[in-house]
Image (cartoon, rainbow, N blue to C red; front, side, top):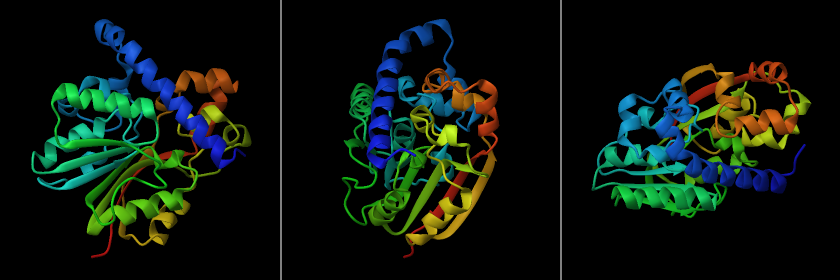
Length: 275
């Protein structure tokens, strides 16, 4: 098994590569109509209107759901996105909170934060603040936000208990948690657990569903609901930005990876911080 420090370094380096590659590929994708990110995003719950509203370069096809759609975001609220990446969910939340609200995106990867900030500046978004930081120690004040979002990111964090404690800390009393993530219905084979590429591909870091829900409960959240659960399409694991590296570098056959993916579910969870 990989150590926490090794996991964080691998994830940071992997998503830095994705951010750089997405920037260089963007013009070619739009020109040639081969935008796989858009196809994947529609498949996991984003509408065409969502994808037309946000800056196109903010969508890297790396999510496993649409937490903005389930968060019931209101005008003038403050929203935090844990693991904001290139900013897709932040840009969608920005339109919902309006000019009187605020959106904060926190991501550990310098290249992702820089990419998101550049798009916010280009698009004239004045109510979004992208911050670089560790999800286990976020640069956000206590009891500060109304809603915490996260999209297929907590599975990448080695200490999930600490990450959910941070979500609980920054929420105001009565605040809401809306998470889309990958969980397991049965244990993964060892060749996946020990694969750096499988961590980057949101597979090896996933935990059993009941453990995931138990962690949310253990840090103090109430009214925990599984709003939706479905099998996660294997093409979203092997076909998106980190996918080719997962297949090639780990020397895992497509058949073996497909069998491993049968242990994986996409889950959408809502919860409340007690008032």
